[in-house]
Amino acid sequence: MTDTATEAKRGAFSSRTVFIMAAIGSAVGLGNIWRFPYVAYEGGGGAFVIPYIVALVVAGLPFLLFDYALGHRFRGSAPLAFARLRRWAEGIGWWQVAICVAIAVYYAAVIAWAVSYTGFSVTQAWGDDPEGFLMQEFLQVADGVSFAVVPGVLVPLAAVWLVTIVIMALGVQQGVGRTAVIFIPLLMVAFGALVVQALLLPGAATGLDALFTPDWSALLVPGVWGAALGQIFFSLSVGFGIMITYSSYVGRKTDMSGSGLVVGLSNSGFELLAGIGVFAALGFLAQAQGVEVTEVVASGIGLAFIVFPTIISQAPVGGLLGVLFFGSLVLAGITSLISVLEVVISAVRDKFELTRVRATLIVTVPAAAVSLVFFSTASGLSVLDIVDHFVNQYGILLAAVVSTLAVAWGARALPELAAHHNKQGSVRLGRWWNVLIGGVVPVGLTVVLVQQLITDLREPYEGYPLWMLAVFGWGIAVASLVFGLIAGRTRWRAGTQVDGYEPDRVPEEAA
Ligand code: PHE
Image 1: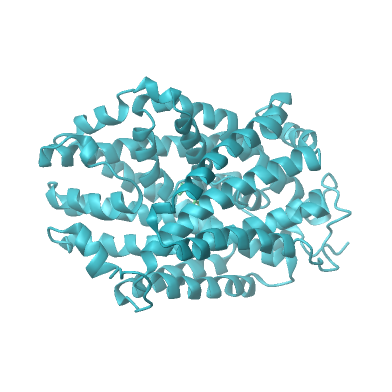
Image 2 (image 1 turned 90 degrees about the vertical axis):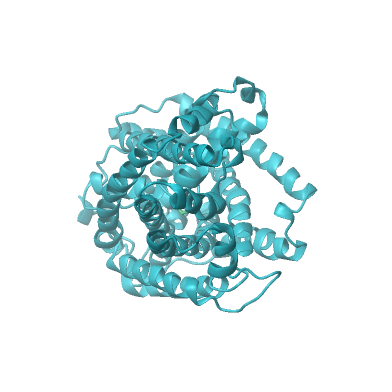
């Protein structure tokens, strides 16, 4: 049997621990550090724990096991796994591949900024105007569109891509796996130290009060439940092919449902830790400026690159705080970036007979080129913001809805996937799992999507010019879907078993 997509050739993680580390590496990312604390604060503080846990248990963890089952049973990248399930479903996998390309291109830019800011922390290069420094001196943001090159971004961005390309070229175990095994413990140490330092700052307790004081009325706001669901999906890295790809690299006898619990709980644990660290620091800032915590909270780029520099300038031993914070962003970011790139490389390798190095170069060199062209120029910031918003909403969430509906109702394959987990998993998936994946999850996600769609149609996102939203927002979201539909209809190499694939027949080299 010459199945050219066999395990030995595709690469594999050397152990369950490496897989778990890589999966945690993907899940723990910028979303945990700069998104979760704000979402939790806005969503009722201490009361947010309820929608959060409900979303985790009812949607996040079940969906994680859904992704795992597809990848582990059908032993392929997203397109191959879907194609082996049902040939018509392959396009969903390619759609996810396209989404991952879009994410990789801008995610690398944020990591590059964090690299620069790790250095800036030492000298506090932003002086007493972090916002002006970020916009004018560092990013040199222009009004409208300008393709003037900003060397201060170009150099670190090129470096991030270079490191990433080397990691990807080294392969599944030596590159992706080993990076996670080194970076994740480092991240825990660095971030743990950051949290301790933040807790020792004067005013830290005020920040924690602000974060944890429950506002129970928030539970009556539907948007809060939607925010919890959106946060869980983004944070766990489910629904865009990553977990399908990673679990295809895991030995057939591995307990996948138990691994899923470890990954899911570690990710949420890190989120909680980040909430504590970020709000302790915000409490300090509020006290130092004599204002309420509400006045200083922020998320995303504003939190990391404007508010944190302000804190660093005012805190005792601020330079250390800055190195720990931005260093953590870099570590967490790289392990997430490599996970999205692995989705693409794995798919290209499965579809075409390519060596690891060749597939890596074919994928990463154009991605790096696009990334450098867009994000080391003066219009990078708005493009990044738009792509991020639209890809998350209309890429990840929509693809997640379509994949559950296709597998649950189109292919009616949930019992098969549950049985796969139950062969060796430590968590038994009963009918409840089918109900969640086939009903509760798609319905819940659709409600969130429709809410968001109404908002985006009513008013242009963040007031950006319509043509920019059309090109970088709607354009990329629609293009990735169209790409998926087309790529899903292309032929497979003669050597790859797609139609006749028998998941329960263990090929010789894997036995
Ligand atoms: N789980 C990641 C996070 O929390 C989401 C992500 C993964 C984003 C990979 C991009 C790439 O940040």
